[in-house]
Length: 157
Image 1 (cartoon, rainbow, N blue to C red):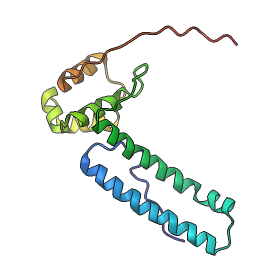
Image 2: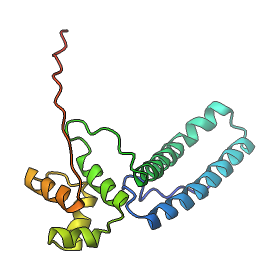
Image 3: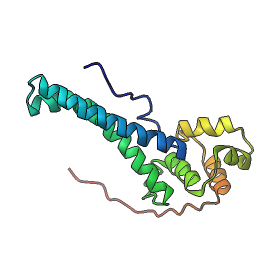
Image 4: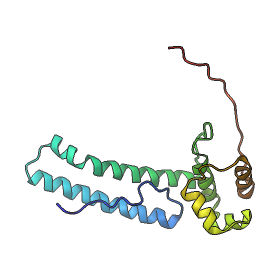
């Protein structure tokens, strides 16, 4: 059994419709591979529990890719979910750009930076950006971010 899933893109967010189609095609190929592997393992005499142990890592990568495809499809519809304590703010910026149909080049032009800079920022999901840069991105996208503050009392052990 020498066939295996390719996992080079699993941890990378889908950013374009072209990437979406490539990942959907890869999901179909990976599902076929998983089915073939299960059949081969059955032919080798493994029981269901043993088969599950063998294919668990493969299924994990498959499910992770499936989640990325589903996330991209949700943001294309404008379904962003809640942003809590600025966690995933970078994914929100990328998702808003995708939803609005703005290319990385167009965003770069609006920000007066290079397309390579936007690509790098998105690859890093805008990790470590300043409040000022976040505000410039929101303005360039034409998006308003509204924040609600809630007090959460400390838990007593």
